Length: 120
Image (cartoon, rainbow, N blue to C red; front, side, top):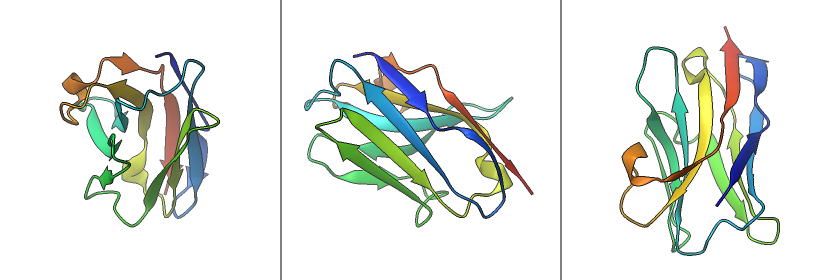
């Protein structure tokens, strides 16, 4: 599984961005898929998890503002982010891994990340 993220950029608070994660070899129907983020000086944290049954779990900090969608035909996992806040600024990573959990250590395939900067 080789993952590539895109769609990051700079936006003002209250704005929106759509991140996309594509895997040329497929995302894997038996993998958990996740979006994570890491701000400078902070630990990598979970943003959203897409499990093998198609259920989605969001971190409390993004509930109601972020939406994950998967397109099997395109091998993409997108993250639509709305009502962005300055605290959403971070490097965002797409990840895939066996269905064990949704801590960063549970995922063994990672993209290179895409930077999101939200100015207030």
